[in-house]
Length: 301
Image (cartoon, rainbow, N blue to C red; front, side, top):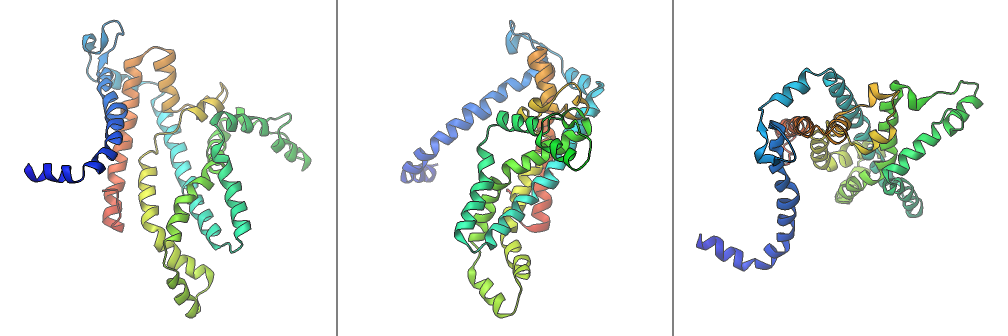
């Protein structure tokens, strides 16, 4: 104990610097976990958390037996996997391409253009999507009609929703997501490329055998984090693009929690659904982290 206290006194300035982060997580991350117990109670606001009746797994059972359960899982998992399959590799490809640009001016231009959409609010992006895909005056449908096609009502056909959600997200975030890969590429020893050039390796060969292995630890760590949120499809954008005609493919766990918990005042039921979602994501994170550690010797812990 004395050794620990001496170390703390020796590095007191570093601990003080770290203290706000600890306080933040205790207050805003771990503190609210106290309220998770309402998922196992029939919560009544006037009785409070402790005074509400304990009902065990009743709300979980209700969710598993509900008509919407499999549709919610299918839509949430479908969007999450689609987003992972498309949205994860594209920033890597973009970073590799930007890294190969030799003109500094053109490189800055490309980076600015691809970074800019990240700073648009979700409301603005949803409004732009609605305008561009309008069947009457949308740019996309005007181009379709110019080539002799019939206008498509993208926003009201359930089959289009997942693609609209995922590809608009790729456009908005691919530039920003590529920053960390560009930083990893900047850390690769230039002498490796010089030696490869001497041996006659082409640019594609150098990308495949030097750049990709060099950023692979970063790729694996970010992949683990992405898989850990595969069921955490965001609420805002889905809700803004959702309408009564595309609900069959746009209703996900987060929107269901909002409608049942906030609008329907079923706080215990919505807490149970949200807890189920978080537990599944946590399990996926643990499993993928363990697989990555065994296969690639790279993991979060």
